[in-house]
Length: 430
Image: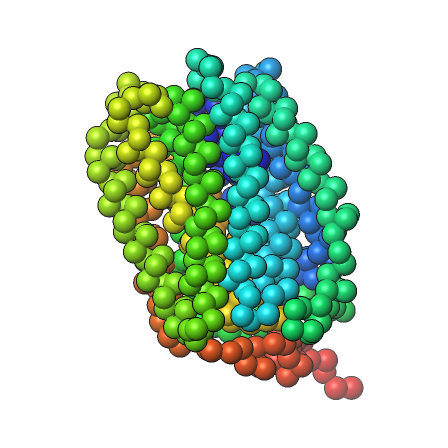
């Protein structure tokens, strides 16, 4: 539901200012707490972490509804966004750790693809509701009924983790049990952040890819979809965007990343080639459109679904949806290829969401202060290309055909003791 509103541009509002500032607050808190949410997940357990992480989405949607009744309640939207950042860090870390830990090595691409498809079905349903509810609307923003429907659905979602199977009882398809990670103290948990970097420093080469992974949403949703389309076209663009993600995640997960006839290293490089090609295809295409409008001229365009230029423009949204799903699926697959240890994967996921959110916070704020559309577009293109370039040596040096035993245990006793000695003062002898 959050995706459906974000994809409409401006959270479905006529003005994108409050939404931009809310997203900047959201991703700022997300970026900070993302680095520590893996440790919280290991202590609280996945089900409680998911419940605590879900309710913030209902609060944000309620704030959008409130501004329809009280237009001066923009500060409520910003505060709700900041709270959601904390909740989202918990939700995405728990989800990511489970998604990467449950499958066997040969199934990780498929499991990630299945998750991404189900996740984006929420965006599809939400977009369809918004499109249908506003099809005959001449207003610049979505109707109250859209927000109320989304609010009900997200409140239901808060309680779903109560019915989830206990992760401690899960058995993989090869008969192995998913290990349950227990650490004795908060001190031990925070040390795991450092140990994860110390034992696997190659993860740093994925940080540019992480940084770019939510950065491109701002241009797609606000500076393209909300900038030059009316509310009806925005709704349809949003619908095809999230629908295409279902197919994109399955395509790269099943046909490339889990291809049984290829070694894992070969699949890693094949995935890199596919995603890199998509980066340049969509950005060359989008550049041709971005050249035709600016912030000053965009309001005069307001393209509708019946305009003759519209079909070509909606196809760009479809390809952007494919790129997004392939990018995110590939990023998760790369982290999963580095380890099967749930504790280490939880920390990796925290890094991923934290750095991802730092990039998103910056670009949402840039849009709020009216940086030119072309500047935001070019920075998006450069960052996505750089992310793939930096990931290439990591693929060559770190991805193996099978995960080694030393990658299976994050808190190696020797490593932890070494770190603890370096931060614990030695008591003087009597």
